[in-house]
Image 1 (cartoon, rainbow, N blue to C red):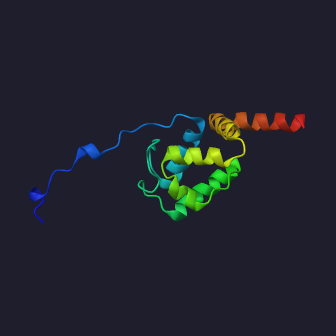
Image 2 (cartoon, rainbow, N blue to C red):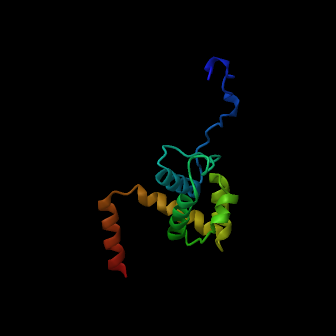
Length: 129
C-alpha cells in the first residue's frame, strides 16, 4: 500500500471534548472510565465508540441499579449511548428524577471522604440508630 497516495485524515471529524457537569453525568463518567479503562469521558462520547460492548454495558447497568435502583434494559443503553442521553434515560426511568441527581451528588461527596472520615460517619450513624 502506497501510504503517500492515501488522502490526509480529516481533522474536522474530531469531536470537541465537553466534560460532564451534573452530578449524575459525573458519576456515570466515572463508571464508564472504570469499565472501559479510559482516562476521560465527555458528555457527547458514545459508550460503544469508546470500545464498549454488550457485556461491558451490562456491567454498567448493574452498577447503575446498585447505586440508583434504576433497572434499565440493555436496549435502553443502545438507544441512549452517549453520556448525556444515558444520564437522561436513568433520570427519567426513576419515579423521582430529582432523587437520582441527589443520590449522585451524595455519591460524589462520599468519594471525597477519607477512609477515616467514612468510618467516623458510619460509627455516628450506628450510634444514632
